[in-house]
Image (cartoon, rainbow, N blue to C red):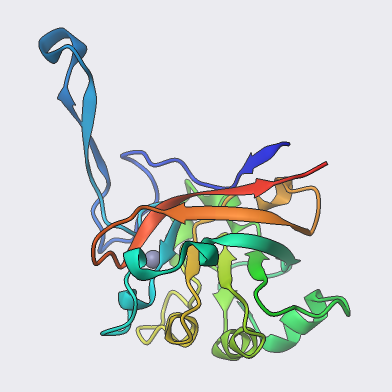
Length: 216
Ligand SMILES: [Zn+2]
């Protein structure tokens, strides 16, 4: 049962938004001095491949520890939108085209593949990403999907200070995954997907290990 890792590595020099700190992986104890080795971690919850909880944008909405685990596991579908490059935003009609007549079903996990993760170590990764438009987010809300992921750092336009895609999806209690990686390695369009967040009290999000489970 092959498992395909769909996450970016967490490392000190990884791609981060300018407002966020670079993660620190600090050697805390050592085998030489203490008999056991540990690292202390310092990072925002939205480091690397991560899930956004509704509380990230909306007051009094669910934090990451309050969301049913069932939301983070299920049947996923990759929508191939690799023709969307730098600062191009997917509209609802583009999602409909990518459905190829096989309509998105309720409770599907929708993963938007742009292959933007190829620019992971490049400055433009953070600044010039493709993403979704507000009407695409509204379409996915209407479809009552379970979760929406993308292989870019931001599902919204990087120049938007209003975050309409985040607010539309999170407002409908649909968690968001950003910084997915390697969607091109998944050999089939629909598959079982798992991305479990840490159980962080009042967390606005969490890094995840997102995987595709390919059952033969
Ligand atoms: Zn986030």
